[in-house]
Length: 286
Ligand code: C5P
Image 1 (cartoon, rainbow, N blue to C red):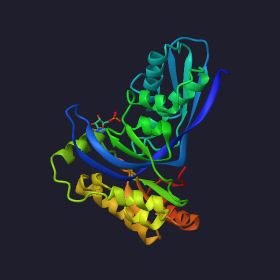
Image 2: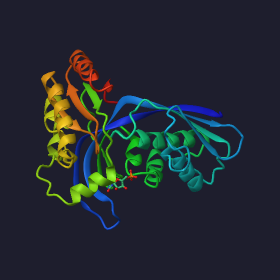
Image 3: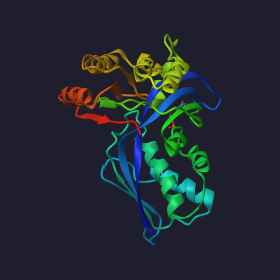
Image 4: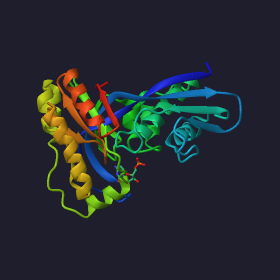
């Protein structure tokens, strides 16, 4: 086998709490992660050429070691002693870039999983997740996927009861966010409201979608500058007015998502939001 294509799923944060800053500059987190059906397609080809090359359908992505997909291949090669000369990584992007939905981390995780299979390295999913720590904070989660509690830097993972079936509308407004900048802002402010992560986990265990949606919360919602927070609030209002059981910011944003009982309600909300925000998707938990 010389070629393999894998889906790289987007993730949403059902909760995100920042517990404090660590001596290594990262932050201790407590968050519930959920992978959803929106995905990039990652194709790995062993061509017999030289070096590691990246081909992406979005021209403005870096194509060297600054790209998380290339970094993942380099980490895999170092850890397993595999010669990856001639590897071409092709990214067909569908997950919005810099959106708080782990598009890059998920591509990196797919590269780790794909190379493991393509090269017959035989690493377990847990070993691949461990390698992912060297690639990025969200990569270990993206290797394993599903519904997970993530703690520490994001790498201490506990599998949770799956999210009940539902339709989710993801909506990404057009403004950019800087993740390090938002973490810095949080460091200088008092966090007034935190998610009830344990309550949300109990709701997952009970299979109670409405209680899950009601308890979704992300501390970064309070760290956004007012004019950005207003846009988030506007999207949330539309989602709730259209019947969402709850709505929340994902990661450091700017993607907001709403959880719906039915596909029809989700499609109607997405149609309305798409008039203003092109990058609006209806997805399911996976
Ligand atoms: O690990 P990753 O490269 O995805 O992190 C991007 C940035 O997010 C870090 O440089 C850091 O500023 C912030 N971060 C953090 N604590 C975490 C995860 C990310 O401070 N647990």
